[in-house]
Structures are given as structure tokens and as C-alpha cells.
Length: 148
Image 1 (cartoon, one colour):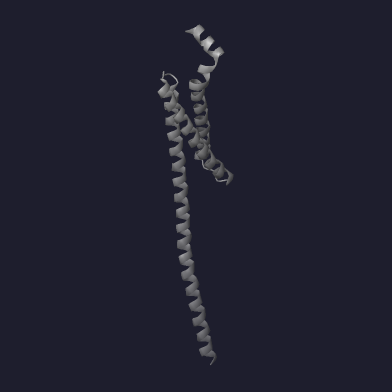
Image 2: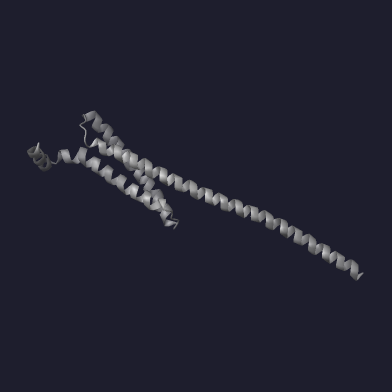
């Protein structure tokens, strides 16, 4: 009888070990997949930040070109609209940046993205100043006329 009971105990242990082993292998595959998914998400996030930074750099160059050109009142309304849209984009991106940076998650792209956001805001302010504030500053206009 002891022999039959011993065999039963060995079979039970073997059965449980096989179940644990299968679960562990499934969990290992799951863990590997989770790790791969996480790494893929990080790479995707890094590419998104780089893409946004590059897009902002391109837009900033185009905005800077505007300050060297003359425009009609109709064009000024369009410029005012794109400045407004630019400010909305900046606010949205900055809100996302604040949320991301508050998590403590940092990649090498994050500070570059922040710099691009800061530069973008500065360019928007400069273009706004050049077209809508400086022309109405009588003292500045008088000084500029002396040099022309």
C-alpha cells in the first residue's frame, strides 16, 4: 500500500510541477512580449518626439521668413490666424510635455523636444511683434524711418 501511495504522491508532484512549468513558460513568453511591446512603444514615442521637433523646426524657419516680407491687410489676417493656430499647437504640445515629464520618464529626445517648444513659442512671439506690435509703436516707427 505504501508503494501505491508513494506512486500517487510522485504522480501528483509530477503533475503539479508540469503545470507550474507550463505556466512559467507562458508567463516567460508573456513577460518577453510585454518587454518587447514596452520597448516598441518607447521607440515609437522617441520617433514621435523627434518628428514633432523636426516639424516645429521647419515651421519656425518658415515663420522667420515672413518677417522679411511685406503683406497686405488680407495677408495680415492670415498671418494672425496662423499665429493663433501655432499658439494652440504649442499649448497642446506643452501640456503633453508637462504630463510626460512629470512621470519621470526621460529619453534623450525629451529635452530636445522641450527646446523646440520653447523656440517655437519665441518665434511666434517674434512674428506677432514684427507684424502687430512694432508697426503700432510710434517711437519705434520714428526711429526706423531715420534709418531708411
